[in-house]
Every structure is written in C-alpha cells, then in structure tokens.
Length: 64
Image: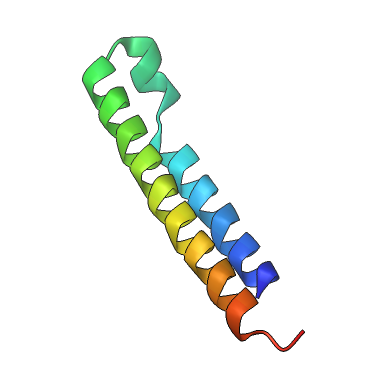
C-alpha cells in the first residue's frame, strides 16, 4: 500500500509542477502564477489529509 501511495504522490507532484508555468512568472502574469500555486498547495494539502487518514486505517486494520 505504501508503494501505491508513493506513486500517487509522485504523480501529484508532476502535475503540480506542470501546472506552474515558469514563462508566466518571467513574463509577469503574477495573478495566474498565484492562482496556480494556490491550487497546487490546496491539492497537496488535501492529498496529505487523505494519506494521513489512509495511514491511520492501515495501522488500525493491519495484521502486521
């Protein structure tokens, strides 16, 4: 299960990195950059909440 969560985490990171456009930053589109960063941060926070919940469930129901 840990491997699956790690793979999902890596995909979320890749998508967030792809969403944040360096050219927009350099060209001065600050509002778009801020919106993209805020969206990425919200996504990561939500994923962290899900991961912590999953970890708790794994500990609770795992036989090991």
